Amino acid sequence: MTADVVVVGGGFAGLSAATALASRGARVVVADARPQLGGRATAFVDRSTGELVDNGQHVLFGCYAATFEFLHRIGAMGNVRVMPALEVPYIDTLGRRSVLKCPPLPSPLHLVGAVLDWDPMPWRDRLSVLRLAGPLRRARRELRRTGAVTADPPGSVSDWLRAHRQGRKLTEWLWEPLAVAALNQSPEHASAAPFVRVLAEMFGPDAGASAIVLPTRPLHEMYAEPARDYLVERGGEARTNALARLVFSNGRVVGVDIRGERILAPAVIAAVPWHALRALAGAAPPAALAPTLAAADAMESMPIVTVNLWYDRPVMDDLFVGLPGRQMQWIFDKRRAFGDTASHLSLVTSGAIELTQMGRDELIALAAREVADALPLARTARLVRATVVSERQATFSLAAGQPARPGTRTPIEGLYLAGDWIDTGLPGTIESAVRSGHAAAAAVESKRSRSAGL
Ligand SMILES: Cc1cc2nc3c(=O)[nH]c(=O)nc-3n(C[C@H](O)[C@H](O)[C@H](O)COP(=O)(O)OP(=O)(O)OC[C@H]3O[C@@H](n4cnc5c(N)ncnc54)[C@H](O)[C@@H]3O)c2cc1C
Image 1 (cartoon, helix red, strand yellow):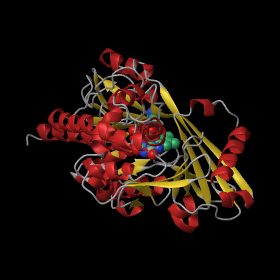
Image 2: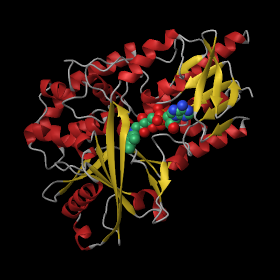
Image 3: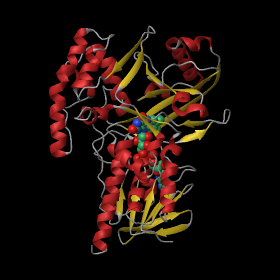
């Protein structure tokens, strides 16, 4: 069999690349090793309740421009809810509720207004947000000029926040939870540059860029299945249970082998995670690929732990709530997110190395305790079911000393890379995956145009 392009990996990176190429007339075959598309953003059927349960809550932001372009392309913008502005409810360890809410002001004044109006913050902490105005303006300017952001001073997120004298409580309630959610790593360990990049994108000229965007359907239904339909309508296909190996000939890629079948194609996009690239390359990859494979092998991974709890009645008044000072960082009410098709709470802990050492029962007991502490209605409700999803390789590490992230092009003719770990400057997020997918599609398309003599 032949195709114009084979894309290995059916997550956000692979499907955004594949649909971008299909929109320009290419016949694209996507192959994914798993039984279902979606990769690290997918859902599974809970065998007891029959509900579709995400492998972990995913939050998008208004600045996810490439992701929205992809969702528009495949007709899936209706599967996300775009909040009008950044608005985050919190419940503290004493059970007090407060809301950080951006007023309708131009960005970044909207953030300043929200923090200045945030009751639980001591005034010293509220005012400390003003010290970030200068660094953020400089980061925005650098991003516009060079397409990248450096942190000043360099070092960890905590070093950067300390250098800009952010108040202790503002750091614990706003900056650290945002950093952990965006980078999936503790602020003491994660490098500041990707964090400053996230802030520069969220708090640029458009106030809507910092608004929270939530899926309204289980993840694979939200984007992966609409993407598959889009490909099939354009003569392509998306195969599952399709573990692929690259096929090389004379030092270039000529296609892939999938369970004994060879698909020949002049271009292959490897949209697999860092830890899967070596297996995809097979036993004898060309020597020129060795440095890329060695860097991918050396990248470390960070976990995300989710505990799903089913109570015998609704226990939450908010769609989601932040829990400063607790181990479970956020609670999402999936009933409010998905409507009647779900009835569970999802408690998420990012960068959760300690939690991966705990047993299932211990995690469930911790989650139930923290829910009961935070939500009075849960104290009289009965917990009827609980599951734990531990994603040990949720994202790559952003700690100092990690190998440099690779670019789209490789030294091997015909082989392109995509995935959230490609050097987009962003942390391991949906938006990084989609930007990398679009970059790979653009590189393949420019090669196709050159070959066609256009
Ligand atoms: C629990 C959790 C919560 C998260 N929360 C957020 C969030 O709130 N916001 C956010 O922006 N991001 C979040 N992320 C990160 C986000 O999910 C990822 O950045 C994104 O999904 C990565 O997409 P990808 O296409 O690069 O890789 P993947 O989704 O990993 O896709 C790669 C695919 O390649 C396939 N594959 C690998 N090897 C082969 C092979 N040899 N042959 C065929 N197929 C192969 C795999 O099966 C996989 O499906 C979260 C991640 C997790 C795990």
